Length: 326
Image (tube, rainbow, N blue to C red; front, side):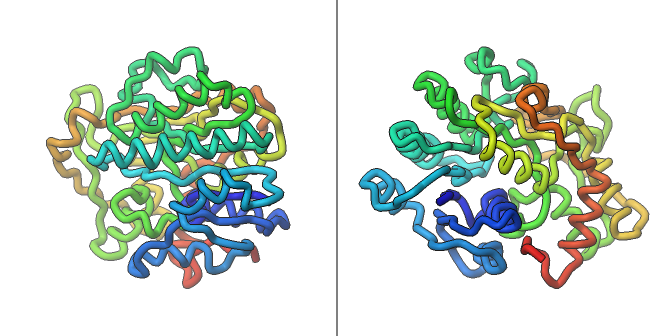
């Protein structure tokens, strides 16, 4: 039995798809589906699992032993909004909740794979190495990143990371992100802007060392994320791991590639960045994936050209845009 928290969400439902395609459907989903207007439920509709448990009920059921035969917990559930202002909510949801799950896994010898975030790296001035000896030097730029950073610290101090794998996801894009609204990827937003308006809006640069649209990110395709997570379920690698492509690409590259996947010439409108974001904005991220490679994951990762083409042509442009095993 495998449990996926946040299992109806973007990465969680994609991981359920990965498991289903591997022949595994003895899976429990932990999530809230929310309003039907978000249509988050559609991520689960083509997939197979044995039960779904509300988020607030799960820790108590877990701790009193009501769920039997658990081999692994994939903990993706969190409030992932980088603009969330309710610090106490983030503390309870992303830190306290995660501690309860990790404590259970430690006490019951259950494999734990959990979502940290590249937001823990802050402005990147300390680099993007997942070497745990440098954890104390990191300074996240927002409360979301800090809530993830707090749990990484707690997991390190309490020897959880001697047995579990914490995943620092960089900029993930791909199918099943449709419910994320403002937190959806630039590819998803660009696709719809091109379809509806014929052009893409990107932020201007407010630093002299970066041209407009040349801000750099490590973009990773969702199918690479699920392949890595599946590998980590089957291998005993432990500690913190960056989940990125290991290559920094510009937002301009991303937008241009989306136009290309739609067979259109690029038209980009550069707009001023909101004042509230300018002091917290990352101009460069790039995952150091040396540790993941050294642990034994050797598969080739997807370029943005190949990933965006597949995402746009096989999912966003399809009448059946959600992951399903065909």
